[in-house]
Length: 330
Image (tube, rainbow, N blue to C red; front, side):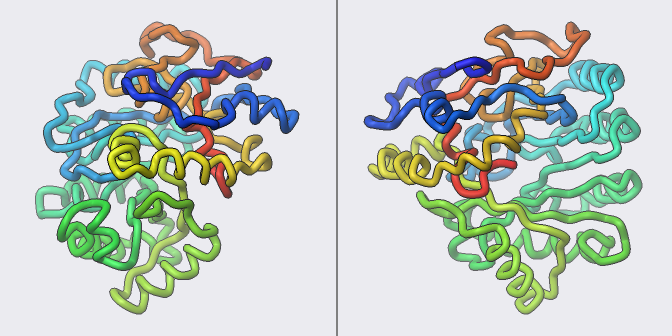
């Protein structure tokens, strides 16, 4: 189908695909849909796989033992790349970006290059007095903080992220509120991202936001701006867990049954480019996870002089069903 390249989820994983699952490209064709690029306006920067946590749902298998981190030289190339093109959003992610030694250098370099600058955080990596300067930097540059917070039930959240992690996250959220984040009238935006703690789809975003807002305020006096619900993508550590527990086939069928044609038009991969910790470009963070570079050819940001044009193909695999289940990754 025009504008689509199907790929196997076995790339880089050494495991089979789910049996009986219709190829994602075929599902699009059956609904009369295509998945090509629109105008690129978002640059997602993956600063590396180093993380203080080892979350069960992580598609990148990030953790404390991962040594892939973005160097200052690569950061300079990313800043130069962002200077050449009119991005509307720059989204810094990981791993845990807070642990990358030269993160302040990257933030300073790109802070004036896009109207909206986002920093993803698992919250625990922002804990401790050593992170006060990072918080001050975020406030100074009006950076949008996007925090992972899977559940208002500590036992459920800790089951996904590790014992005691929720308690630490609550402390950090209170500190962010004290700095003005998530507080009405400050202009400092604090968003939450919720992933299910098991092999099932998230509840509706509206329902989840209403519950989280009430629970966080009632239990801990915490406020935030908005909440986003996303399905867990069957890659990396989450895929391994699904296979080990015998849930992979069932979960894939759940994703397929949840396919929402209306979500395809607004998928983030249409308008986003993802740059890896070593400076190479990908369609999205999930294609990065399986090692499928943009256009099937590794191109470094320092070598790019034009963005992919509208209609350029996007590589897909069966894990893309996670991006189109329910409200999808939009």
